[in-house]
Image (cartoon, rainbow, N blue to C red; front, side, top):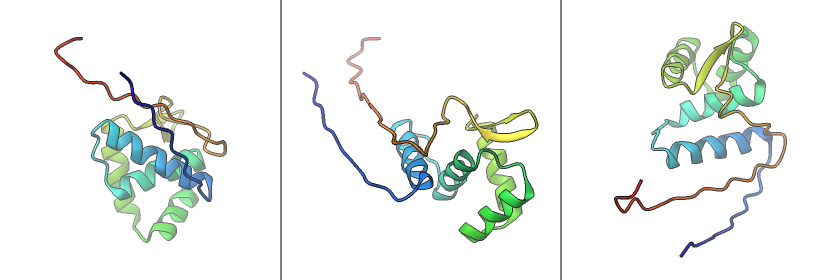
Length: 117
């Protein structure tokens, strides 16, 4: 028997949708991303990349952080393949990148592993 539950969550902006999406992805996949890491991935997804100084400055102002902190988070997220370098630009891995200016509908299936593969 499968239980289906539908949830709707109105949000204010593309960034808010991205932040909720990456929070859910982190929780479902046991990624244990910190709040700041989710903020950075979300910001990167909405802005397109995190390579330009003006984009990094905007992130620092918005989230009251520093450039060295951003560099550390980017390095960690690249090692985990959440961020990738594409044509010299730091972007969200295409597998996880969506157009957050659109509504996002997720289907999550949590399955019991009763010893079956």
